Image (cartoon, rainbow, N blue to C red; front, side):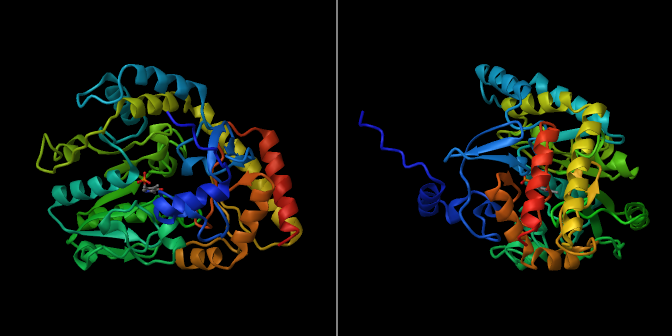
Length: 425
Ligand SMILES: *Cc1c(COP(=O)(O)O)cnc(C)c1O
């Protein structure tokens, strides 16, 4: 064996090396700091509300893996569950008890959700859900809303939020005109025309990939009725809201039931897992019961189901009340700091979900969200916070994700940092 190379451990040096071997140095575009400038911090480890970079700096983390780490990083119950699962083997290609347990847990929480199929990401969930909707209705077209993000599958990559908006793209190169020909894009918070060619209307019931924008009063109810009138299915993409907003997700929160649900992020407890589900009848169209094919070598992976189950078992009604209290303290404190400094900023909060717009009035759809995201304030705010040891997402379209591990001390330190940074804006 040769001596290990002397490790030059700095964010800068790792980013240089990363860029030589990974496009943009990252495995998901938002992480590259493209829209805020500068060098990404490379994470060495994380614990509770904190991430630590390779230079030993500690940050209060509001990225939290963009949602999955709802209990905070490296939660002991998840570490124990994953460790225990790993000692029994990491993948089998045969069914396991934990797959049954997590499906029972999820379906018992959500009214109308009878069956779920596990996949390995939110992208896979929405992609498969759309195929299922088309197979169920025998129709081709889908409607999505501008600024909603449903993962990176071809037919959904138009007018997307999150990283696709950050890059200023309306869609992606490499997607054929045919792949998006059946995708209709509608403005959020307006009921679109739905005719009898539409298989499914896809929506983030709370838009959390263009900042945070809630549904206007009556919007989801109206959409439900319009889908019923047109014989189209309604799909809630609950990859962010599912099991984060409250015990039963957005459907419970708003009292509107979709036909198909998509989940991800929280349900994997920080490991790669997504799911889609529906009634017995609709899920009966999925192979091996029906003719809509969908499969996955690592679907229902034993490490992911163990982590997800451990997370879900901690997500009690009390836990949601606690997370909402944490988000409220943070959101109110940030808003007060902005107001006191006379900075035009809105910190929208819906239950435990938080957003941030540098604008006087909260946007209700993508165009105004885009104007707020692109006005140049966020990058300065982001770097001011990062310098003070607070890690927000490196993009203005992302939500703020406090976790259950964030205590009053971290929240108050964050608000102090906001107060300092707004004085420099
Ligand atoms: C993150 C996200 C997805 C995609 O999930 P991945 O696991 O990143 O593929 C889909 N829909 C929504 C609403 C999301 O926030």
